[in-house]
Length: 65
Image 1 (cartoon, rainbow, N blue to C red):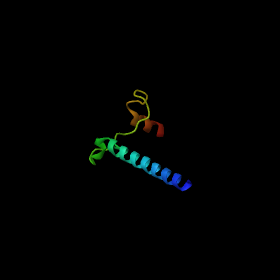
Image 2 (image 1 turned 90 degrees about the horizontal axis):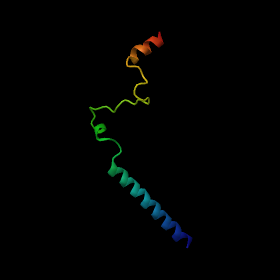
Image 3 (image 1 turned 135 degrees about the horizontal axis):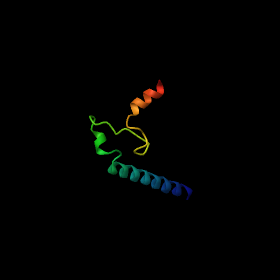
């Protein structure tokens, strides 16, 4: 009896794993623009617009000096 339960549980887990794998492949893991090797992904910027100054490079150089 216990062996039948383990087999059923294994089949259920395998079914869930296959369903998750298929659903993630159908949805796509990345935007279509990232598949183009000539187009780099967008630069990550965690700050809201307006917080960083527009002349950030000169500010960085000023701080380094």
